[in-house]
Image (spheres, rainbow, N blue to C red):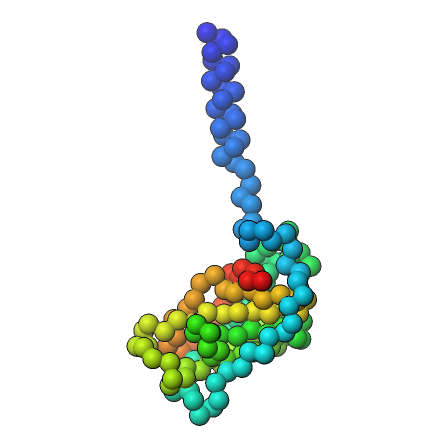
Length: 162
């Protein structure tokens, strides 16, 4: 009886310990480092005459907070670049300014669909890692609106793409 009781207690403690394991940070499959050798992209927004409407986004990128083990040495660089996209159409770009990206997002008249269906994805080029990251989630495009502010910037979660 005593042995059975100790066995049950031991199994319970093992299950408890397994359930209390520290949650590991998300890591891209097959990626042990963010460092690569990707050239800075030539992303460009549509010409002024091509857009029908616009919005703004104030974005903060903090890979170190999202990936403490892989990006502990993360720093913003003047050559970093963030861009808004709809599919493969670039909607706007920005470089860092005092730790934030002030992104002017245009919607070209050539893109079809209803305003409520329009989604914006972000891509980020890190000059430090020489790599491109993409935001996990898109946000809706709404004319004359703002995604984030200088006081409370939009902080998307990114995954490495290359």
